Length: 519
Ligand SMILES: *[C@@H]1O[C@H](CO)[C@@H](O)[C@H](O)[C@H]1NC(C)=O
Ligand SMILES: *[C@@H]1O[C@H](CO)[C@@H](O)[C@H](O)[C@H]1NC(C)=O
Image 1 (tube, helix red, strand yellow):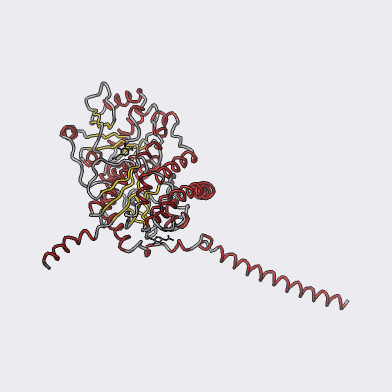
Image 2 (image 1 turned 60 degrees about the vertical axis):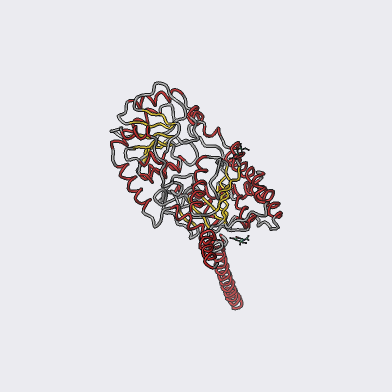
């Protein structure tokens, strides 16, 4: 009997270490979902049980994965902002702040008011050891941590910047830590430094005077009743947004800057890349391996739809590609007529596997963060054609690091692309540089996916990792800049000055009155 018990105990041991984790990644964009899927895959592989709030649930999910379907969010995907023809005609003009934050607001409200999400929150059987939420220009989703009464892990999808660092440490110095939309690198010139300060102050004012009230309303209307249904009191948003155990960042020093970071920030850039590469189809493998001058891989990601490309540009590109010695793999969702011999259209492409192939010499990309990360992971130089969002910053950063050239969307793109391709294929410095960065990227104590699992488990084991919290969170800003001390010093100096002045006046007065007496 005791032997049976022992066997049972041993079998149960790994199960007891499994945690229940809620992953909240409801942004209805493919790249955000790839990042969310990366969390889910790695946590499942480590034996944990994951509940996943996602806009792209899969059929027949693996065991231990419970999906909460918020595919309804897709209706708030800004299709207009990723129409390539419109982007060319608007010459890279970005949406206004109010349009952008309007989208953030709709996505946030639609997620937390979604009936599947409300059902999850109100189900008393649902409990979690930790909640991981993606920060996407709002902290509304930190409410999940308060509703379930468990530690909060915030996930930041880009390099660290002031908008996220303020919740776990404090505002970084804008003189050398630039804004999320800025491509400046230290040392900044006078005007650039002034602009960074202005951006930070303007952003803070926008948030506190306008957006915070909207966030608060969404938070209170959707989380408070759910928390009360569970018999809990909701922590106010203004407290909860600072109650973050850990921030996991899709960043790495090889991809960005050596930014000063608090202990509660862990960079795990590259964790989304599955080390088990999907195999190439036989046909694709053949094409790549028989290209003796190498392969150029061209993909503008999944958001820019091929049907929106102006016809003349498609034709110019095909003509230009036909003059190259290399094979061009073009990820495009439609068949193109009169395809040159060296151009192959792929409706779906196993991007990491293609980039990993030694025959791939060059990647022409929109410069999304996932693509630039994969570029460094596999060491392939790029031509960046930024179209929207953070792509401009990513491409400019890659150019600054020396492994990329930038080409802008325009009706002359084929001509410009031709020059850039020639430069990248003949000047070896781009490839050398990307290989150097790739070495830095891979030379870590542990692969990023293992770090992800380690830190999530660490937060659960240590009940919210309070030891990682930055002491800066306890200090109000005026104390950080010693404004209170300045007031004290100034008051003392002023008091001394006034005192001395009085003393000396009254002495003078005595003297004059003495003089007057004499006279
Ligand atoms: C998610 O919800 C949508 C809309 O209700 C539905 O069409 C889709 O099949 C659902 N997906 C899964 C995997 O259940
Ligand atoms: C902050 O989060 C921890 C869990 O990490 C929780 O125990 C604590 O009650 C929270 N604090 C507030 C004020 O809600």
